[in-house]
Length: 393
Image 1 (cartoon, rainbow, N blue to C red):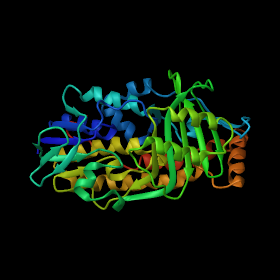
Image 2: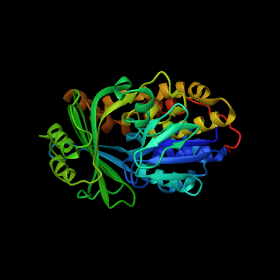
Image 3: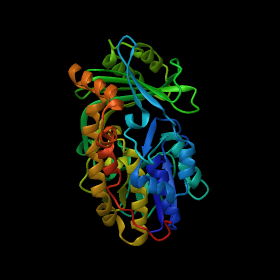
Image 4: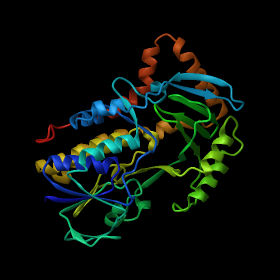
């Protein structure tokens, strides 16, 4: 088994490509987009994932591109600041944790692999035969020993090999939208947040970014929408956030002109098996924990390392699943718990949260309280002991 196809050139795909090449495999990556995806939102790298980054020789480069966020400030409907907290605490980061823009991380991973991995852009898989013959939308059919689906929560590879997404997706009851907007608030490594019962708006600008990112999140019953119609999706966001105060109306106006608009439900992927025949899944395609977990990127990085290592050492996909399953379970558990602190259900709960943020710097035992807040994320991020696979150092 030496000739491997990876479907998807995001974090899970590019990281898996790197480790497979380290172990001597011939790797092809097919990506639906016309080029490597840049931009996106900020992501955290913690625990075992930091070890993976270090073993790739990327730790210094990742830290050099960190977002360098400083503070997060909550504003009321009239635009008055009501609570400010340290950005790392806001993001649940402790110790060596690092935050980076998703596109920056993907560029670093792509640069590691571009000269040794075949990348096929603007194409996607349409079929996978039992003998490993893969058909594509544009390219001629080719035969591979293994196909790795690293194409996200709405994985096309998973649909082909395992069945429709509805069999595996579990909605958390919330929606999220992110896009680039002008930095009209003059934010400098700051987050500005306005929360109301059932919905939250957040806008932030990271280091060396002249623009800002606007994030909207709200609780909702399932919404019927066409994933190919961003204009209709923007209207769903506008209706969900209608009537909000602060800067939300202006952010919604800017959203309508955004070219990098992202919209999706907060959902997780739960599967009994991540492999079948000549197909195996990694990252969000196999075990999406949702953005609410704060661990999607770390799951992708660790999954890539473990999958490639087990294939190379002879453990195969069964060993990959045994190694990863407890780690995935621990990190997926964060999503439903975390989202309740991101979108507050009642005015009373919101008032209590803001009061605690204001009081936290002055309370005795502050460090212990911070550890209680960040502790579950830290525990989940370290819920695996990485093996020293031959060739992975």
